Length: 585
Image (tube, rainbow, N blue to C red):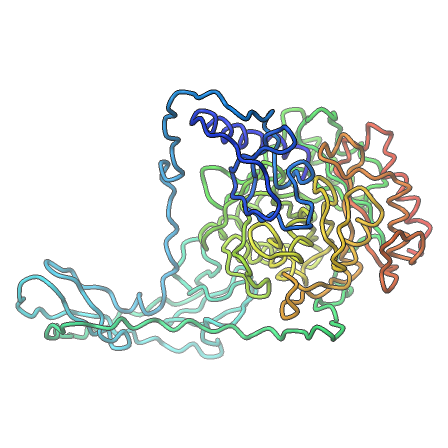
């Protein structure tokens, strides 16, 4: 969670607290073991806190309001007898502002079986395969012939027929209803020719003019059982046994993977001034190997649309020149999607395709090397959702969208992620809500993933896979949380839901460059950070947590932020680059 998260969440908390005060509702005392919904206000140690997300305060987890800023926001001093206020005017609900409803993806059956115009009753299908049906309700009609098209597709020699279960990548061609289509990007189960913003483009041919077939309206039938369209059943992912040592499923990095230093220093560059000051991109020191331009955000009026507006503090021509200069020096300059205020809604195939188009345009315009996924809002999964076969639209569509961007820009396109701890390692204790919310994204993109650097700050304490609690800002916290990604862990403590380890070269961790960069805690000195790196990479200088094996190929470290690092003379970047230079490159 970046420091600007506080501004975003403060507005939400202020609104919730105001509504509660207006209604004259007194806050209950926080209790360990209770489940709290987002917006609940509680008393704790003389202060009031508002729940930011729905969660359960598991006994022994230590998730009290004062120590878990990702779960609670302090909103004032508690009062046992609040002064009654006037009767509150009911707050408008989310449905007061109409939200466009995404149209469902049409199926081939619906296209071939149109419903006839009706002056009475309801049309009921008897057999979708033969497009026969009848009218129910209303006066007994005079049978009227119903003309249905009978498609006679012309086979396309050498072009395979489209399959709803097959995965297609950019450039692959299929035949469907007598026409040839070409995939624009990664796609699965998207019917060619049915989506305006879809992944298929028409190459040749068209749906042939049908020969009309007269189908008389059958006699009414008292009841009809709807015939469900069969849904393709995905191939089950083999579940590793609890005792087996699973191998990483990510494809080994080959010659076509993005070129990076063996050990990298990553930092976020501000496209705004939050009190740390601004700097030109060209002035970012050479010690930073990956520069994440912060942030591209979601358009609040168009679902799925990503926008990036260079702050008026900067000159766009200079910005473009600075990107090219950094790239010429061997640095990767990415655009980071999300941040504290960057809500982007990907709840439908239409929103997904708008995202692919708009984000692709941003990347192409500025020549960014890749995308950093830093979504900190609008991501909540169902309780117990299987990360191997996710069902949350935001997860499914984000995975498909990033795959499409990788397809468009090629093998050198970089993909990094910076989720908060709760969204990743938090899935060990419980899966649902924000807990483990990123696991489906990480697993779905593990073959595209360049580097995962979880934010080890603003998070309080959390359990490691050894069921011991570790506190942010310590050597043990960095080691225990990182080791979970390097060795894998059981999601929700379920051995049948084992999250496979990532390659060491895909893993790093993120810490703040100064204490001011993470007001809710997690700062750790350069010296202690390097003790954690020694432990992870060499099994030296470990604290109470010691991994089973050394990981000398660990990719590196990330910081929020480059701008905050400047306030200390770039101690973070200079210190860690010098440290990594002691390893073979």
